[in-house]
Image (cartoon, rainbow, N blue to C red; front, side):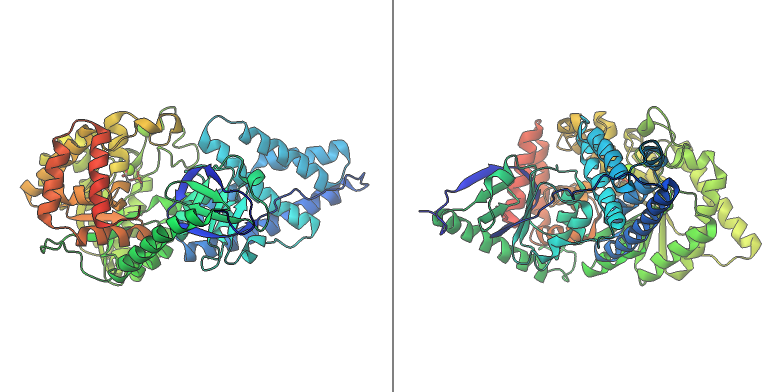
Length: 582
Ligand code: PEP
Ligand code: MG
């Protein structure tokens, strides 16, 4: 059987970027280059002034879009546009364009296009997946500058793709961020990967998406029906009636499951047999409190305070920090906000302070703070002052020894005393915790627990340091395997230490928000799971539909295995038994 337009069914495999299945008419997004005239000019300086004015209009436009995205999706997604603003500040790019105009005496549009294309080509040729995908960021920003030069209004053609499936070579982050979520059914792109910003945004927007589909544009014509299976990473062009029928069951099952998950979003964090746990939110700034409340997070389990520094690309003053922290605490409306003190370094660089050969093992987080009281002190003062607006806990990142923890605590107490002596309004001593994300801290967990109120396990780093696998290196991504039994027994050691000393054990790395892993974490003894707010509904659902006995049994089954693949299969089967999305 064939689809109505009688073109044959074609199946194309791509990369699953955002879950869900949707089907509809193809909306082919034309992303052809504008034809730019090439003309001799007489006034070079006037041409360069036009360029500067286009740059400044683009800055205003991106800053506006950034704020819209921050309130719609959150600070983490908005940070993409901070990177775009940086492209506009790139001195090398700006100088190259001015030089090109002066040397060739050709119009600015032509010169700008030439230089921008050179930059895009360089990134597109890069071997590293992550860097190659940055070409789409540069294309996005330079396209906006060109629109201003040409006097064209920035178009969001994609916004007219209502009830259609957007098909494109690649989607820029701004195109993805402005997709009407209640209108676009799904999207498929020929380029892009799992770490691409459009894939990240699709997940945050809950739009099914498949990226990196080779031959996509050649296979689709306007008017074709396209089915996007964001779970299997499959695009089916002109599905036959048999395929549609097959998928209809799947689509209904997924929709029904989602509805069910959302219906339980307000119910308490408690297993079927009454074991309580707490789901919390990971945030990067005041705007993210919206999502935390929307999904009924118990509080904030991780406030990544370095985001303010990265957003400003500068060192904020105590007052600037106080203003932001107080806003977060106020918006939390009495729920506890767990501040993580500054975690700069690693892949979070600021200026040349953290520019070094081996950054993940280097001058990072608490190491930097203990070495730089001029940075640590204002942050702790700002946190203690902001704490009077609600409930606050504080934790230190990258603790590797008892000595380091004691130094951090002493510094904290000295800062508190300083505020008392100065008569500055501040809170009393908040609950203090440490991120457990370095293997030595896991091994010392029993000792550390005696001196703390809580642990928060940073699984992102813990896995990286335990397995010696750089968490951001695409080439060795296969080796970054949390199902390695060494990771699981380390988690058990940490939770047992917390239990022995009667302190709270939380997890705030990505594993906490993964419905495959959350049951194992609770079974192993975690009390709190903190995650990106959009991950909350599924995790809450899976746990609410389990009994503690089932979770303990899951732990026993997982711990009897020695191979990661088998462990992942056990976790996947358990998740599917509670939440059947396949
Ligand atoms: C972690 O390491 O798991 C964590 C939550 O911290 P970050 O991802 O910010 O390093
Ligand atoms: Mg970490």
